[in-house]
Image (cartoon, rainbow, N blue to C red; front, side, top):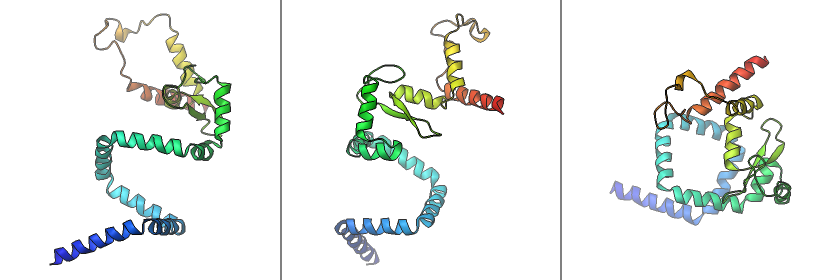
Length: 202
């Protein structure tokens, strides 16, 4: 009998939540607004205690519902595009379109047109000033280089070498180990160069 009683309570609670969804959502938003610090502290404490299990659950959920999540994200961005542009960058859709026309509809760095998705808004993370529109690859490239001109200049210098007589790869041949540096090393290299440039600047 106790189990049936508990099940009845769960059924009743679920039904109430479904029937009064909007009312509960408004109440929750109001509570969060009035107790924001307390709510955030509770969330941080919960996340700290359940970090591993939440990480495992979230990873599994993303893998099991990848297509659904991607579709939802696309739909959300499309529906709230104007709101996102204004909130994150202070741009209207008209501002974005004007910038796109000024760039001839292509990425400001590589000059390639967007491949099935809108160009990303690139901005200065210190001043917040919008710099232009970039494709995903170029936007990630700047992020991995921490927007550091010295790192990017070092990369240009590296690619401009006339010979690659590094002793570490003197005997390497195409298709053999040691011929290519893993792409996973690149972010580590960027962090190392960034620290070096910061140290020189002090």
